[in-house]
Length: 175
Image (tube, rainbow, N blue to C red; front, side, top):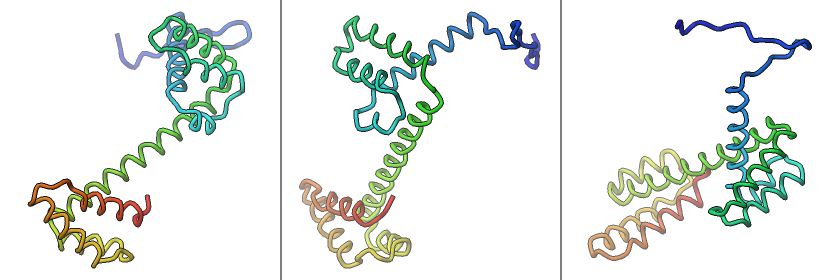
């Protein structure tokens, strides 16, 4: 069969596209997955997603039900039923915004970890390149924390100074 083959969609008497049984099942599965994603968010995160009170209450009830019980599965079905009556675009946009924020936060966290590791392992050269990018940082403080981190590393002590470097970077370098 030709990959470029794209048949004309079937239309009903009102001119609306008739969906195949497979497409209807796929739509139902997509809505179910949207419901599962909503249940995984905290109440604070749910407040940032536009939804009606009925859907919010159904999600909160699902969070109180043991996920291994049959009642949880039925509650997800109810959430799917409620979602079919909602504006899915707004809900999906809210979920995407939350996920994008989470991704940015994680990326920033990993960048700070990498900067800390560079300071501990490379010393003055890493501090200088960091100060070139962020001139408002305190060179003396960074060098002092670096020396302390190296001492702790050589003495095989817990990396308290390395954690201090991370916290200093986290407080002074914006996302």
